[in-house]
Image (cartoon, rainbow, N blue to C red; front, side):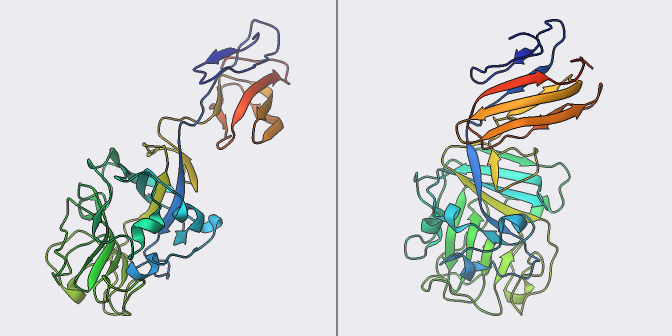
Length: 330
């Protein structure tokens, strides 16, 4: 192709430059190797109950527009088979920490994992986390129920009349009959028939998210945020927790782009990015699932490289043409 320079192409592309042969625009294209879908978001101070009882039977909560600013559950993703799970702590869509695990049993859905008639007290992943990232100096990191301890995911961990929907095996996992209130995680309850009744919850002891702490009992247990039963006290909410699943993605882009309901894995980059480009640009993307034609952007000389965000498109080739008086290397 004349007038352009192709870098790091993930697959063959058809690229048309301006034909002068003496000015260049550097760009590259990467295809997603895997994709994450948002199944759930837990906001421990939004006024909605995501304690133990709300996870089974699960129903849709919220909308895509508020998926990362309030409690959210996508029933379609909840029902989808998954091989990998990522839990991401974030501040209104800005990732602060993430961990990824591989499920021991391929293809099971989150609905299967949290259905009390199918799953009880299960270590659902194996080999510990595949990757982890924590922002240096992140608040509450040492007491975070996901990022303050190591190990595999324990799901539907009921014990006596208590339970945590998600906890980590590296923390304290209470024996089945122990009424010690000492397993802390996400989706918690300290006073209901958690081992016998689907959706069981009390008015007094449910809470969205806990922290890692020493021996506590009832009202002395510290929780995150304001979403909790009547006998618990408000606590610091350190962040929201987004739960993503995937059949194939095994790494999560944190730090990286702002969170969305769908995310690429860490090994993918923004599909189309231009650098060292000046003037008006005409981009024609031909895709198997969608077309974006006559996409234009004015890029002044020396400006920061810009990105055309085409995530989710299964594109086949890209055509880039000059519309201004020049291409230029800034």
